[in-house]
Amino acid sequence: MEVSIRLQRIGKSAKNHRNFRIVAIKKAQKRDGGSLEILGSYEPYKKPAVISINQQRLDHWVKLGAQMSDTVRTLVKKTAKATK
Image (cartoon, rainbow, N blue to C red; front, side, top):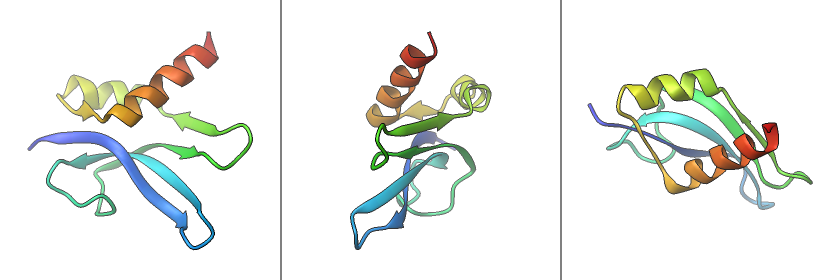
């Protein structure tokens, strides 16, 4: 089973106030399909944008071979810079 770590859209799309979950999900699954585990959230419309990630669980999935999407990789780098 190939697993990827990517964004899952939630929230109000009518007012362009979409929020996202960072999830571990099967690669073949649709974007908004059922996820294996919720790893965090991303709220781009708050000022400043709010990014929360459970780093221990993210590391666990990466060790199991899960591939991060480019967007999630960028968000992880931003949170790593913010905590230093």
